[in-house]
Every structure is written in structure tokens, then in C-alpha cells.
Amino acid sequence: MMNPIYLDYAATTPMDPDVAQKMAACLTLEGNFANPASRSHRYGWMAEEAVESARAQMAKIINADVREIVWTSGATEANNLAIKGVAQQHSTKGKHIITSVIEHKAVLDPCQYLQEQGFEVTYLAPQSDGTVSAQQVKAALRPDTILVSLMYVNNELGSINPVQEIGELCRDNDVLFHVDAAQAVGKISVDVQAHNIDLLSVSGHKFYGPKGIGILYVKRGVKIAAQIHGGGHERGMRSGTLATHQIVGLGEAAHMAQQLLPQEEARLRALREQLWTGLQDIEGVTLNGSAQNSVPGILNISFTGVDGESLLLSLADLAVSSGSACNSATMAPSYVLKAIGLNDELAHASIRFSMGRFSTIEELNQAVGSVNTAVKRLRGMAA
Ligand SMILES: *Cc1c(COP(=O)(O)O)cnc(C)c1O
Image (cartoon, rainbow, N blue to C red; front, side, top):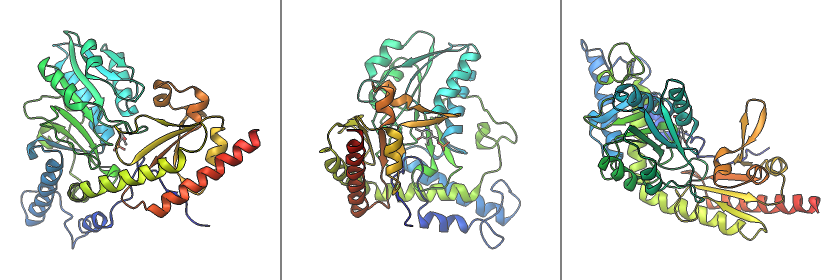
């Protein structure tokens, strides 16, 4: 049997072969395997040099300084470090945090944890296009607000928040601004300086780097409390022996993404358009989020009057995500889709297609054909 067509790049990307090759050269005795913190021999110096070179590559793609990059195990840890780190460090100034109801769980869960610790959290409801406006943030600001945490790009919808405007608002009001950019970096241009960002989370495996590595950008002068202690690595913000191979892989992924971004953005936009054009003639099809204000690689669509589970089952030749999330034992409708106004049934009957570097026109043609056939068949059965 043929492998299904991979259209789930927003869940994770395969590594680029170049990234894998660079990583493989950092593992064995013949390679760059040493502890970058070893100061007493050549092996250590070489590993440190590789880590610092990757740090420069990572800093460049978000227009940061190398001293502002803190290696983490991914965006989940970066979000935890940013949110809990700010809360603990700045609690004497205030205990109020602003975020949104459609954030990733890696933001929502730390916020909920802080509520149990006596912090107050305002959860903004998104507009129907899946974004939060600067006006909404402004209306929620209080004298005791210490942090605004909002995602750059929503992982289910692809919608892009007005980050620059919100950043400006936060700066004017002396409130720290954290951005979960796991779905943005490598996909659209992210500039921490121009966009007034204080803290930014990045994940390697969302742009053809390895899993288990990411960064938190911490603007110079911003103080956060460490969450992992032991050895004082990363200027005391995140202890632990640096994983040279992971870091080198992330650096290479960042370098490649930056080089390829203009052409890939245009190519993926065309693929998304091809998919949407091929599907929008089906009756009762709606696009979730925004047709225009979206990253190029994500298209989320609902099919009215179709059973979500049956739809997914009939699309066995496509590896896609549905509007249902496995919540413990049961399938729960996506909280993101519900927050932008979909009912449970329609949320279940929704599919997120996400395309990436290795997606082709032929694959999208086949996807269009499969969905058309499946929906027609299911509608025929329902009638
Ligand atoms: C994938 C993702 C995360 C989690 O990143 P990990 O590196 O897997 O921990 C956080 N936020 C968003 C928006 C994501 O898409």
C-alpha cells in the first residue's frame, strides 16, 4: 500500500536531509561530540564554536543579537520559561497576565498553573478570523498587568496576529510581550526588533530542524526567573549540557529557512490556492480563519452535513489533522474552532491541511480529488 500523502506539516516537519547530515557529524568520536562547556581541550572548543555559530544563525532569522538566544528543548519549554519566568520575576509589580483562549496548550497550561499560584489571567476571545486585535489587548490592560502572551500564528487556522501593533502597545504601557512563534519562524518574516517583542518562543521541528530543540529569545535587559537550575548555563536562564547535535541542526534549519523563505512562501501560497480552488466548489464548504491573513502553508476547512469521523476515515490516503482533539478518552471538538464560532458538529467535520517544503502540485491534485470523492460519497449516503 502507498504511504499517505503527508499534509500535516503544522504538526511537525521531516528534517531536511542537509540538517540530518550536519547533525550526524556531531555524534561520534570522529565528529564534533564534545561538551561545549569543556574549556580545557580542543574537543570542547570545537563544540563551543559549533554552538555559537548555530546561535548566530538562529539570531539572524529573527533579527536578534546572539546574547539574546537561550537554547531550550522546544517551544513548550520556551513558553514555560517565558511565562513562569516573567511571573516569578515581576510579581512584586503585579500579578495580571493577558493571553487568548486559542493559544497552544503550552501557553494555556502554564497560565492555568499560575492562576493556582495566585496570578490573574485574562483570556481574550479571538475575532471570527482567528486573530486578537490590539484594541482588545488595550481594553484588557490594567495597572497590575505584567505580561501579554499571544501567538504569532495560530497552529490550527494559520491566522496571523497583528504582533507589531500589540508589541507597540505593550512597550508604550511598560508591559512585557511574549510571542509563541512556533508556527511563524521560517514561514513568514519575523523581526523581534521591528515587531517590539520582548520574549519569543521557537521550535526546531516546525521548520525542518530536529525535535527536542528550540529557543527562547530574551530581549537584552529583560529579566526572567530560571525554571531549570544546575550549572548556570545560558547566562543562568537555562541550565543543562548543551546538545551540540540538536543545536547545530537547528542552526542549519534556520539558515536554510531564511535562504528559502521568499521562494517557499510564494510556492506554498500557490499550493494553498490550488487546494482551496479545488475544494471551494463543493457545496457547504467554508474556510476557517482568514483567506488572506494566513501563513502560506495552512488551510483549515469545514464540511457542512458530513460526519467528521467518517470523513477522516475515507481520507486514508491523506495524512491530515481533524477538528477533533484526543482529550483523554473521548474526541473533543477543537477549542480553537469553537472559539471562532463553530458548533461541535462542524468543528468535528473540519480538516487542517498543512503543506511544506516537500509538498508538490501533484500531491495537492490528488488531495483535491480524494476530498471531492469522499464528501460526495458521504453526502450520497446521508441523503
Ligand atoms: C508545536 C507548537 C508548540 C510546541 O512546540 P514543541 O517544540 O513541540 O514543544 C507550541 N506552540 C505552537 C503554536 C506550536 O505549534
